[in-house]
Image (cartoon, rainbow, N blue to C red):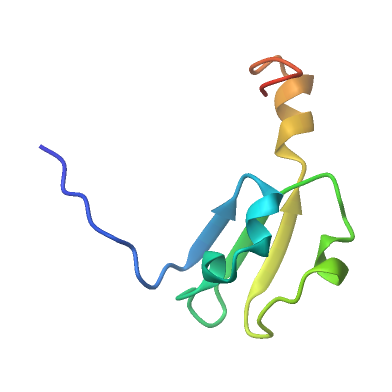
Length: 77
């Protein structure tokens, strides 16, 4: 039996699809000093999106890593 509930104040938000950054709610509730980990090859995303000043941002090109190690396909890593 699994307990499912909404997460209201996460320490970490992982964004697998960077187009979700356009949603104002995607980082709502993220704790001060929390981390936003974004899957993108665009290292300039920090300059293109306005992030709250009190969070940490990490950019990881997880799709390229998955393809490099044969996880999934090039179309769907």
